[in-house]
Image 1 (tube, rainbow, N blue to C red):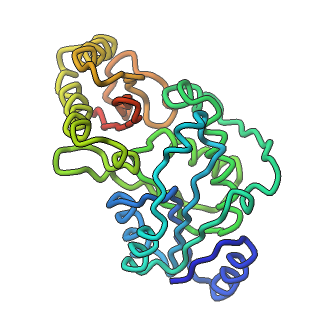
Image 2 (image 1 turned 90 degrees about the horizontal axis):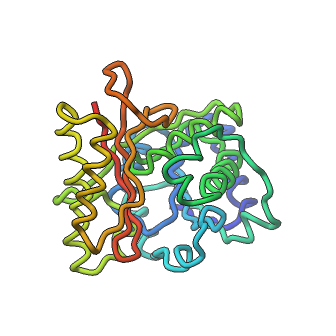
Length: 280
């Protein structure tokens, strides 16, 4: 496994693979790798000649400086894990390497970045688009792998590929969960033992909400979910929305012809956790 820290070294090495017409699969990460990331790398390994993993905590997608400061960083452990997974190349740039000057690019994401995460994290998705577009142009992958846990991000990255007019397939990979249902996330490491015991309530509530689709309207269901979290003093519900899976438009009535996803974000004593579930 090769580890590079500069764009020049990266592109020089990639050029030889590209000249050999090797297919490249990209797994972009912010590190603190867990089994969810492992599943992405394994899928990329099975579908491409070469797998490139990037580890970069991107500052432009954090609207809260404290969240950026506390984001877990476990580079040595991450690299060891990727060696065991037989990743071909890992790109670990510095902030200065990726942003030698301020990036003022603004992406037209339509209304995709105005709801849910976008409503609560101003500028977040434009920051995501900035770094992902840089990585796509540097690496020129055939496929890029993203987990469904960040569902809104997944939809927006597909839109980004359209904007960039790239011949690139975005591969959606399922959420990997702990045995108790909690969606795996790098932020889970910030939970105390007691908080970790409480966290599965998020997934439990999503499942119970889906079961109530036959008896409640979407609006009533949102009210029911809100009430459940009011009973949990350690948790603060930021949002629960049921949206169409392509446009992210909120669903106001049940329509079997529309694919629906229930998306949720919760603050658990200052640790922000997101999850989602298909509502079909």
